[in-house]
Image (tube, rainbow, N blue to C red):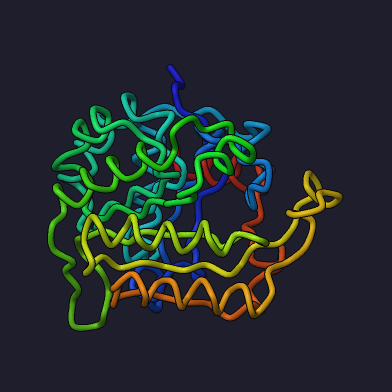
Length: 276
């Protein structure tokens, strides 16, 4: 029975350097998302549930394919909706695959669900999108996002208290928190930095400047433009003011749809057929 829907499987070289490395991160993009943000950069799959149904055996074969292709890790992108059905797959993957498992999520997750993942996930890569709950409701219909995300990331840190890298700078265990800086979102970004610092000031944080307006928000008076250098610099200042010391920044040249993965379902179907 196919309980899982996926939209892309492939090596991805545009994650944080310690995740992508030189060979790429082995990404599996799951269809749907528990937030469905209005501005989502992967709107093709997060809002419309575009994808192909697969069972656990097929998913495991796809993971092995990625490892055989040289992936530094298996990177599960927006997997939260599938937590329960993924656990038996991850249990098998941990005994078969010799690379870290990355849980790449929205941050809007319950502590109870995250506890189910203990022992199966090596690296947590959550978003912390909002410190402003009004903004969270306006853009993502996420009630109480700040508190939910803070507790979730606290649980992730409990499970992975140390950030461990190999001699090549590739992460094998730990937590990296991402924040996508939004237009007119500097105070929100500053608040996110303070929330993360309250959990652990040594946390690695990726301050992302890659926002671009998707068709859904092209006419929005706030979201319908790219980030300015001044806004991004102010968000970075907030990172340091919060007492954070470890992290990643981006060039605003990355704020383009060219960096969004190609969700070619025909290619994915061909890959699945080839691996049977």
